[in-house]
Image (cartoon, rainbow, N blue to C red; front, side, top):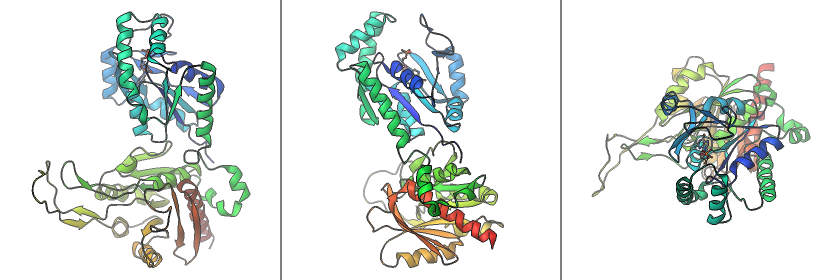
Length: 431
Ligand code: 5GP
């Protein structure tokens, strides 16, 4: 298997709370972590070293770098620009290192949007007085700057609810232990990590087939699509994109080259996969027309919106009286692909169904769409379908066989489905 990609750990909070000390503690303690050296337009302070503390550039250079898309995130903090290198972070994550960022709150929020699985930790002092005396004792800034930084702190603290963890940096020894525990914990989280090899060893028959995916090219679609009625409103559905991103992670960890085509529910995609964000069913279809012929498998986990407004208004529909909205069906992506592409790759479809005939409908869909397999998840069962982190159901194959999947996390199920699909295709190749 490939090296599982690393984690993004973001330490944030007001200036002077001790973020840098905690960040460097993680780097010293864990071999697999690296520190992201930011670029800034702030002048170099006394003992700072170029390339170690920051890369110092002129404002015009920074603005040019923004233009060229150099930054994964950037923000203006206390009158200076700061930014994190996109390429460097993505290279480190792909080789399996965890990247520790010491950045401000605006940057942390941008990172969370781009990498939903990143871990945001907010660091705070026990009181404003402690913060004030820490800032004054740093002796790096004059008293006006200290006053301004304290005012900024109140604004930054107002964002604390968007963070995953919070550390009150009172006694340093305690805070060091806390940040270590958070890091250790994230490495054991099912949703982020590659699947534990120990479990594969215990239940080998359920996981044989993963090896089939090494070096294969797999497309995974995910999330809902949005079908606009005007410039700000759209028709969509409740899909979170979690099943799709879990599938992408499972194929990635099995060694596949994964292309993740995702609707706006999950815009960034997991680290280590190539992500193409799309908005509408039509955009998703257009990408698949050009990509599917080159793939070894298309995993259609996306919950494409089945309907779209018949007309688009290029503005904002006024709120008055009654607005009639006429809907029409969006293209059935798989059926259209079958028609359009001469040499279509095998397809694994997903089917969320309600009611007693759900299973029959799912089997009918598999046939109609020309899929090799379909994962039927009964939407009326507890803990299955959309807006939940678990799932359950039956994976049907077009040779009449099936695999039952008990209720468990989407990440675990993704691993089982990936293995089962691999076994099925390996069997086909032998026969
Ligand atoms: P200082 O100038 O005191 O080193 O940092 C000022 C603030 O900028 C701190 O809150 C620090 O965490 C933040 N910062 C440093 N590098 C970056 C970066 O790359 N991006 C963002 N958004 N903030 C940063």
